Length: 127
Length: 110
Image 1 (cartoon, each protein chain N blue to C red):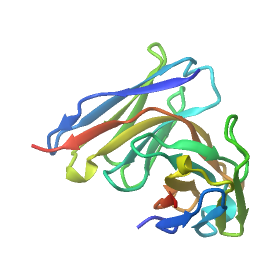
Image 2: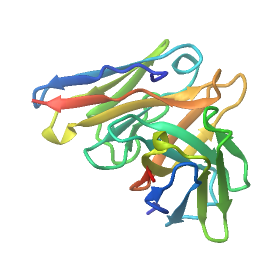
Image 3: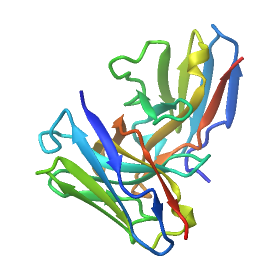
């Protein structure tokens, strides 16, 4: 049974870099046609897609966050990571990692959905 | 302001049926597949529907999805108190090159 588990600091200072890791168990991150992604949810608000990575390193990012986001993958550890730079209070949220079916091709109907989610981890940006 | 528009709340009695709408445009729902998620209080979202109308293994057939033009609908029949949750629609926006979600709909089973 596939399981994803987020880990990282729960408190980050303004202007610092938020770093989270998602450990995948019950399946290989590289033996899959799936991508792996991050989604966040500010307290009391809705979901926001952050970005997605394939085990080969192919990445796609939310355009509004692209200048501050890096998602990387470590197949040897079966995990992937998120870095978000220059954080502010607006980045306070529960961060989820999720297995992602990701197909986008010009002229074809895109298919993007998240079928396995981690429990989420709350990251608060505060001094 | 979400790219996809959902009603903030819906309610119905146990055993009844409810529908939740998700409105978008030709750059998202109109030309891409839609998914739906259930988020029970204090938990992570869970995939309910993908590819507009397909249910993952383990999701009861009380949950259904449909799409017409630039709108999608989630239907839930035989409502149970355990269905009280927030429901989100999601898809890809080809113009924004962005994964987008609706603002969420809170279902209350009276």
